[in-house]
Length: 638
Image (cartoon, rainbow, N blue to C red; front, side, top):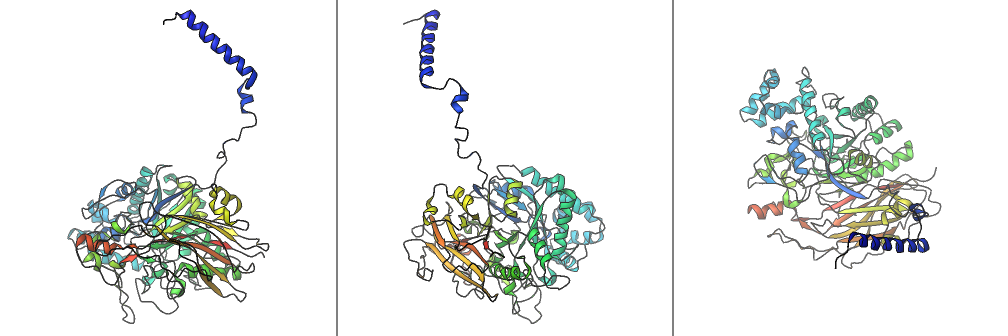
């Protein structure tokens, strides 16, 4: 049937007329009426709380770090960022590599000491060749004597005298390259490339290293040069450098210390570095402003706890490096000032004395890889340095990492590459993946560390939570509205005890979960510090006893010969409500969460199968990867 245009017009008019009649009777006549009373219908309009966890590395070295370059690294910042963003790259030893999943952020934190010397030598820099000391190192590198070149450079660093002090343009030019690479790869909302560097203080071989991370873009960071150990070995001078940067540019920076286990008691010492005076309130305030986070786990050992200090914690002995620093073996009384849990306990004591806690830091993990590759899973470990990248040679297991310098008493404190760990990652709860948002989250300590996998954990503490709240659909919103997140503070107990809501989710590409634990530390009426571990959720129907512990291990599916495990044990998700059963409102306390995965093969086990070599007998077949959250602190009312 065909209709002419006039007929169609009449039909349309009739339809519109009938619709108009219906509107007149049953619906608002305009949009103003339609919107009335419903302006905030969407429940998400005003949400500002962190709703995503972002994974990354705040501690990666490229060929621009002189030690990395002299140990064979030929990959610069550009390739490092591309690898972190999920692209395939070829390592310095010619091995192709790619991440299973891209990271969300990265800090290329190359050593400030003679930044970029190695690539300048590779580029046949006239500036280096025309310099007396530079020519000496240049000739050694070109002759293939990288070890000799490194020894000469390390001696210069140890002396505190910059061999290129007469030519600051070298540092300036290479610092500009570092910043330009970060600006090139920074993609707000998708991938964050922070500008940063490492300050490498190692007095007498003892580790006091810090990574400095800027919140800002190159327009501000290019107004300064990185501070190096040639400027000072004292952390307080680094804090002054950061204060001066912020005053000069209006920008923001934070520092993250790492490897207290290699500091021989200096990392969390009771006295200042230069003056040797007892730390005071001013020291505590400046330290916590400058260093809100601590890198608790990485390739050179795990720094959460030590089995000798926590004998009632069967999980404290994890990738433990406690034989010595880079310069000497351990002495009695050193390890008490090296581990995060001990620092948390002593921090409570200092707060009672000073009114400020100098060790009130949050936790992250990172790699400290010197290969330019952020590889943190056991099945793809590219080693600490390029000389120990995947290969069937003795260096992979036998390369010496510490113990080069003679111990004053002739003790053996050597540690070898087979003892390095495929670790770790920094996890940040944030609203956005941008420099500003992630940096702000780090400053407020809403972070957790993992030993390399991407398990997820969230914690809230408050006074009025109930058991049913752990199952709420609006878990995060309710937690923020009625409590504090990891990194936060509780006060004003008012006769109540703190209650915790905790959820943990496995890495979708890795292992199930074994258990969730709360580690509590507190000081008693006499000022003595204590600790206790509580199991609060366990997998597979196991029971938690009246003492708060589950004595039954989760089991182990690892097949050593095949370097294989399965998820027939454990749980993909664990959640718990927990109330402190021994809370005393008069006692200062901290609480952090540790989440354990089921056992999985260690990287040395994977290597043994892949390269068909004998697995080193002095390292475990399997490990239990884990996460550590930043603590929540309780402070009694004055």
